[in-house]
Length: 497
Image (tube, rainbow, N blue to C red; front, side):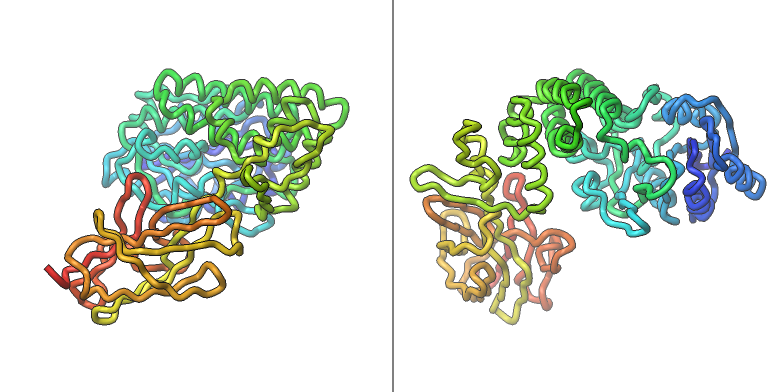
C-alpha cells in the first residue's frame, strides 16, 4: 500500500498534462501512487497519460464518461489505496518537495490535514496567489480554522494532503458541477480536529494561455457565476450550522474576491446578459451580512450602490477607474465634514449618490513600523516609518514616545522624507521591563494612535521578526509581543533595577 495517493482528473488538457505528470513523477516523496481519471477527453490527453502509465508503475489510469471534475475526483478516491490523499489539477504543477513537506508534517503532528502556500503561473512566470497569501504567511502546527480565521481563504483542495481515515470518517465527497471543491475545502477545515499550515509553496496554479480556458478563466460567464453563487450559498449554509462565527469572515472573502468577478462581468456585459447579471448581483448581495457590506472599502461600496440601482454604465466607469488607479486612490478632505475617496461621480448631482458612500475615513489607518534596529552598548538605534494609509506623502503632525504602563517618555526622532525617521534611545536610563514605542499622527482633525510594529514579511528584516533576540550578547533584547490582536514592537531592558 502506498503512503500517498494523488488523484488527477483530466479532460482535454493536452498542452499541459505532460508537465503536470512530470512534476508528480519527480516528487521527493517516492512512496506514492498517481490515480489518473480520464473524464471523457477527446484530444490527445489520454495518450499522454497512457505513456506515463506504461513507463511508471506508480501511475494508474481510469476512464469514465464526462461527468465533471467532482465526480472524477470521487472516482479517483474510490480507487486510491494510500494512507493519505492529495488532489492535483491536470494543468497545474506540484513543486518537488511539496508532498514530502505535507505528509511529513502530518506524520509528525497527527493532524487531519496539512495545507501550504500557492503560486499563480501566468505565461511561465510565478507569483504569489492573492487568494492564499494571508493564511500562509507563517507556518502553524495543530491549528484550526476557528482559531486561524484567515483559513476561510483557503478554499482549494489541491494545496493539501488529507489523512485518508479523516476523509472517510468525514464522508467528504465532491458534488457535480463546477466550484465543487469550494464546499469540500471549507468543510474539511471545519470538521478537522487539527490542521497544519505550511508557509512553503506546495502548489503552482496555472492560468492557461492555450487550449480550452479553465473554469477559473470563464468566471465572468453567467452560468459560471451562478454556479459560483450556488457553491458560496452551500458553504454559507454549512457554516451557519457548523461554525456560525465564521460566516462573517467567509462573507468578507466573498465580498473581496468573488464579488469582483460578478461586478466585472456586469461592467463588461452586453444587452443580452446585463439584466440577468444585475438580477444575480442583487440576489448575491442580499445574501451577504449587512455588517460586512457596511464595513467594505469605499470604492467597493460605490460599486455595490451602482449595482443595486442597476447603473451598469456607471459601474463600468468605476471598474475602469479601479483598474487604472491600481490601488493609488486619491483622497479629498471636505472642511468640517471628513475624508472621501475621489472616485467617479463624487459630487455628481444628477446621480444623487450619498456622500457617505464615498466616506473613506475608516481606511485611513496608521502605519507605524520598524524597518531596522541595532544596539551599541546602551544606545538603541531604531529606524522606521510612520504614515497614514492613503495619505502617504501628506504632512502629518507626529509624536513618538516610550511607554511602560502609565509612564510615557517623549522621543525626538530625526525625520527624512516626511515619513521615515531615526531615533536613538539611551536604555541605561530606563527601568527594567518591557517598553513600547507609541505613535500619534494627526492631520485636519484626523487622529490615529498606535505602536511601532515589525515590518511585514518580505520587507527589510528587523530584529522584531524574532520572538526573543539578544543583540550583541547584551542584557537588552528586542522582542515582538502581543497587544490584543495586534503585534506591537517592544524592547526589554534590564539596565536598571
